Image (cartoon, rainbow, N blue to C red):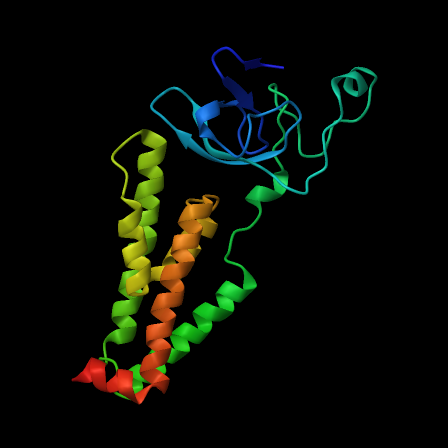
Length: 220
């Protein structure tokens, strides 16, 4: 196993990349330290010409444990999701989701219908839908530029900026960016804040439709 306990770093083998992915123990999210045979998820970035690096490495719960070194030497088949030189495993299924979850898609559909209804009823400007479309495209673009900046070691977009765009109504674009680009899709604290912005935005939008008091406050 390629793990330097003195310098606290190792390498992950992923089916998504031909090269082993470096990570330091400070990039590990969880209790204790990484151990041999652990299945993990991570967010890969590229820094300059140094090759890929894993960030936000987390233990993947509920995945089968790998075969031991003794079993491997005895000719036991390797796990389907592969084994790293450092003894870590990367589940293949982390890369297959290319769209938001079904509940998120349904929420996006309800949001679009409600936005159009309130615009037609005069509770929102007539340009609400075109503005919302542009805002979501801008949000997706901001996620793309932030991912590119992370891969090239350039200036990152502050997370608060991404959350503000989601709060203003760009959360569907953010959801698609997380799924398609696989960016900001594994950091628990970021995802929690993202869904809080979604809840706040949708609460205000629903209030415009069903609360006369809020309608009066917004239009006054």
